Length: 84
Ligand SMILES: [Zn+2]
Image 1 (cartoon, rainbow, N blue to C red):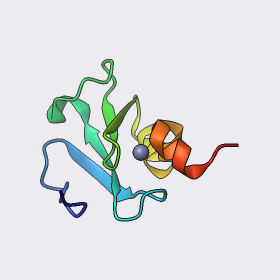
Image 2 (tube, protein in one colour):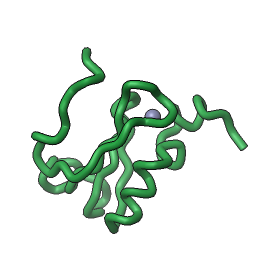
Image 3 (cartoon, helix red, strand yellow):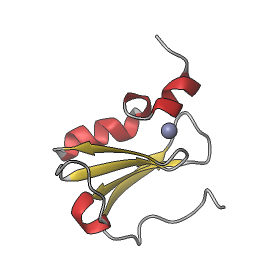
């Protein structure tokens, strides 16, 4: 399994960023319908590559905020970060 897999060629790809919690892993934003991800009808899907966690967001600014802070939607990232 490679952490260096490319996402930019995938269907619905919008953006990606390194996971601040899991070195070498990424958080990716997709247009949910194009990537065939069902996130309760929300337009954008944010995926934690390291843990396979998926969150839905209704707007791109919200999706980008999730991408920058995966501990807000990924329990495993939250556990790694340590809790407030
Ligand atoms: Zn995670």
